[in-house]
Length: 141
Image 1 (cartoon, rainbow, N blue to C red):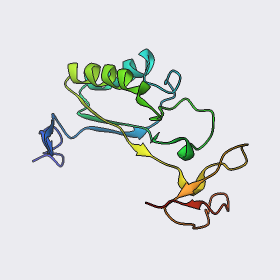
Image 2 (image 1 turned 120 degrees about the horizontal axis):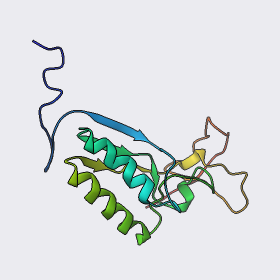
Image 3 (image 1 turned 180 degrees about the vertical axis):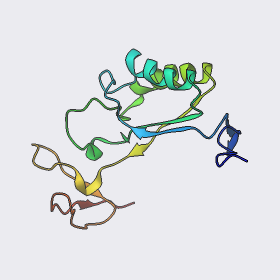
């Protein structure tokens, strides 16, 4: 019996079935175009799916400008609906190869780089960041 007997068996994640348990974890490959999935980014993930990877996860994708780690990046940003066509093309390409794709949603909270003009950090609570010593503005419902 193999030590990895379940590696190539399907996995059910809620309503989504993943063809196997081979995973490419969240990372930023650096291929985003204007912070959206472009041709190179899509080809990168399509290749993994083509070669048998069951599930891939994007690198952390900020959901609000206050959560950006910096003002320049080659990562994907979820700041408005302009990203939808790129996500659609990405998911269609990966699905066509039998793979599945997830997006890691992110907000850098108190670790945002506050030495950039006009940037403030926001977090769930006003706790000092161990990264930069900043105390973020507390978010409220």
